[in-house]
Amino acid sequence: MSTDHAVLPPPTAASPSPYAGPATPSVLAAAVVAGVVLGVVDLWWSTHHPSAWSSVANSCAGWAACAFALGAALRVDALRAAVAAVVMLAVAVEAYYAAEVVLQLSDRTILTSPVAMEWLVLAGVAGAVFGPAGAWAAGRSPVLAAAGLAVGVALLLGDAWQLAERGWGTGGEARVLVLLALVMLALSLRRPWVTVAALVLSLPLSLVVAAAFTVTGVYM
Image 1: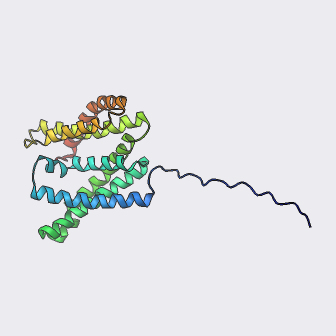
Image 2: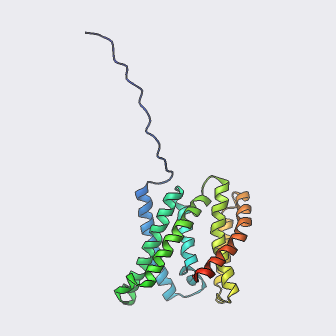
Image 3: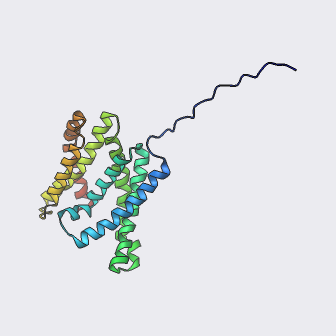
């Protein structure tokens, strides 16, 4: 019998996950919770404390900005940011109308009404665009960060522009949108070149956003 010992291969480290940030189940759970909170709080705020701020929160641009914020906060890749943002907004739509059924005794058919379906479609589009934009804005690549931030800022400035053009938002909604855009830029000042590049890019993009709002008929 041979006394030679078999040579065992050295242990190999587990292959790293191809995605950065938290695990996918955690990302989806956070998106669902955020969606429920967004839908219920939006209904309560707009009903009990109407103001320019609540009007913005209850708008397409406001919800798209929430998708941007979620993508930035999760610190995940663009694909999962898109999925998470779509899930959050879709859940928020149904949570909003479910809260309306419970709190305001609306008919349950509102959950599947044409208006609800329209908002679900908007949730899919806004989440798929602004979720990844938020992830890029918070990412390490300065080029993608500038592009993502520009998209988020252009969303707010474009909506403010089209409101001002139509004489709408006389309650201050346009000013709120501009203020939020400035806050978004201020949060990126730790990377000044990203801030400057995003501001430059956002100005022409905001005209595209304003035109998109006008063409599609999606307003505040």
